[in-house]
Image (cartoon, rainbow, N blue to C red; front, side, top):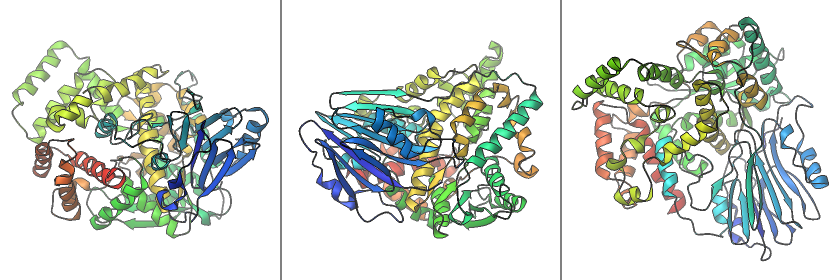
Length: 611
């Protein structure tokens, strides 16, 4: 397994060879540690021009060919090689995406037929942007490159900004710029100057038809996990790769399986901690590294370093991205890159396929209230009414519970990520509200929820999370932050075959009563030390909430940016409401750290890309 990093732009035009002089300027391309100093430009056929930077497999014969960027399972024969995919396309216009596993993106062209076929992997770990203006088609790996093609004037999409303010990211197929779309996960784009079609070639499904005895299902899950993770062990010695290790069940199980796979080879693990109490998990990562005999590498990140990383992340992401855990993710990858390691194995996806997300259990509790007798629900609403005038934290928690417990799904699940919807009139300016309806983001989740081929609510929620929380948030965070440091991540728990296997398990194997990861934890007895199986989930969280309640670099940065005249001049928000959120946060009435951080990153994105 190699660790390629690269970007591309392909332009097709009916009016002659596309001219885009800005794409020849390497300074306009995404930057990462160790990036090549030059951009390569190739004229493939009349009206067809390609720009690349980085490591690609490329083939072109008479204007018919393609490029591929691929990080696959390392077990021979379990997936096609890039050369085989490209050869199949040149020979018979077959794309062969069904046989691929791992991380990949392929861009295929047929110059004489004026046809472009592009597909990204099951969880969009390699992004693809596409746009068409007149007779010109642009396909690019980065939004900044799509805009540098120069075929349209960039205009911020306020609907996408609204989605961002609710989710902390912009979900596919939407993008931050009008007229530019993202190719959804597991999808294929077939385009020409006058046509475009998108089809999904892989999807998670939940037949839940595994009827084996529970002990047999435990053994099946254990064996499937071990075999999958072992397939993703990078080829060659351990000096070129390592693992993310947060001390949670997912990263620890992957690190442990790889650490014990080859006798005498120590696997390097990379962990980040914080000085603030309740946010430092290095104790758990140290338990895992000792238990599995890993080669641990650790770093504690302070507030000054967190603020310094924000500038790096503004350059790492081509759209506004408001998940603050990108900061420790970046420093973890940076630590590995400093050791000369170009690939890290990540544990993302475990919550969403094994049933570990805390929101799944919370939804069960909300559902109990939602389906309770009318007298119980009436008492709840009565208590919430009595507390209406209070802004104390406990009162707010009661009111929030009654409100959310009264909603059906997916509206109830959405209410966990609905910042802009919740304060639609108070936060957004009249002009913004004129452009965006209050339920636009909710409808995104409703549509995805309705698409799920699932037998029960828990599986529909897991499907929703795979499409959004994983493909649009977690994977985007890890891939972009790591790439900035010069590292490529790979995700064994997002292997299609493993996801398919867990879809055959019943919903009660994921959340059983109040037990999350029910079957996984039984299988993990042979994989993990007891302390990690029983620990509460935290992940790569960081203490932004603490930092924003006291004077310091993070507090000062957010205040200087969010309350500036430059931010107010955009006309998006009522500045008084932002000040109100900050005051509530400072006095502890509610934790608004995530909302304030989202607003910060939105403004910094505008300054870096739009202004």
